[in-house]
Image (tube, rainbow, N blue to C red):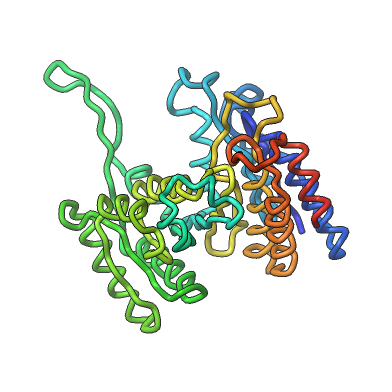
Length: 355
């Protein structure tokens, strides 16, 4: 199994180092061989090659069965030309691999109830939401786009565009995900204001005809943002566009206690999937052994499950993470009064022992 690893910037190399150790132990335990190659992306790629996504990285990813990403970006590159900022590397590789569906589970481990920002009575209902976000369309990629001057003042513009086939394929992914869970799907849009959202809703309703066993509901994005805080237990799977999904998936993540705990999978049709923690590069703690590696480790579990159909291996990793949390070990982002503060390396070692 060929895996392309892109540690990236900030805490990326630290968390990825712990994740690869977990992958190696799983390989030995279950008798698998993982052929791991490393490639540049983001700020480090800019420093070495002048661009955030070198051609060599794209080739390495396409030649692999799955891709692991750490994080991209940091203040060092904030003032460079926007067209070659580190984030362009992430958007670019998603586009190159045709990864149109981003799956972001937001589940609260029982051991981290105290770290959750919501009221105890809300937490007791449980939090287990899957956000399915469209990745390669919408306002991030729509044309025309740009900046300029109009009537003597600066102006910026972007275009939100969704085509029927883009909506159909992400809706199918979401319906399939709901089928494997509690069979409830909420499509989030802004159909009361946006023409593009009215088309989105029409197409999702049409796709629903093929999934009579899944209960479909609709919600405007502003209400969805409120309801995720008010009562996240009402949601099973949420499907939405690129912009709304970017915001709602981060909101769903943080209410679980820490975005340092949550993995993600970006999938396409036949191309290698890309798996990454959702927390970003956290440059303020980079190199200080303070990062939480658990989201990266759980991303590896998602990779094993979705790219290689290794459900037992994925479950083994997830059980090891839960056992580690049960032992009271906490990085700073999930620390509570009863926990034992550990760093990135020690947290990784604990997971290895529990595997």
